[in-house]
Length: 318
Ligand SMILES: [Zn+2]
Image (cartoon, rainbow, N blue to C red; front, top):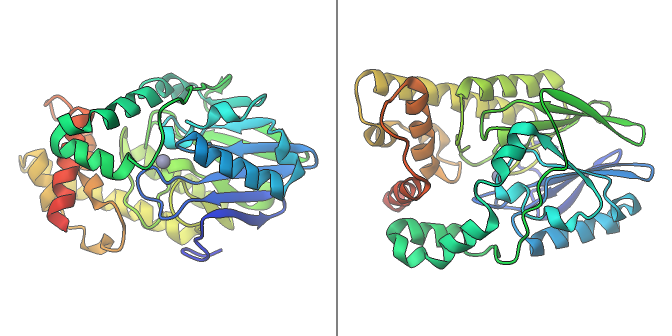
């Protein structure tokens, strides 16, 4: 499946017991997930941002494959809520994540997001942006359900006769990013190491780890690459994201070395080559993370400051 082909909401059969659940348009919170089945066994890659969305996905998966009636293993690719807030609905499954992911998962629980939505009015422009992108999700009543098993580096799970490789590539997008690779079927689920047709968001870095993760995906020679957000892609999608990261790092570095303040640098870098990608305001977070990596001694902006800054950039682009 090439980039952009058949990007419709719902379950996509990639062949040989591998499925992708896609949620267009892939913007803030609209994440993808995956399902791997073999015989009676099943492995789910990620849950969604709230219970309603996750319930709908699990029902469609049960309809597509009897093995999905009782998910044996759930893998969370990373700690962001749009990949794990539905965990409580996958009852009886072993929940597997990297140790770093498990440690990060409790830091921004559903109740915190619910409170931010509740208090959006008091947060000015940041609150308005927050409500615009996250207001459609239901964070009330979610019980954060953490991993039951963790690993570091690499591990392999079996789903029937299929070997499924879990490969820790973080810290990059978050602290504990994991790729889920099914070599026998030429399928890889990348979590938010890949955003397709949207700007990636570099919460954590270092960016070198993320570039290496792209190289690792390219080395797999997979036919179907399921990103964390956006349509199923192929190597061309990975190369485009890699190029974005390398270019952004070089452009940010030039401005850092010239003494340009971080906010000016984020405004100064041209995104013309990425005009078709959504969520361009993420440049604020990305340049801020890069400046920190370069050694900027300024204290990192708080999430509310970052959202205020992104809201400003988003408004100015309209
Ligand atoms: Zn995500």
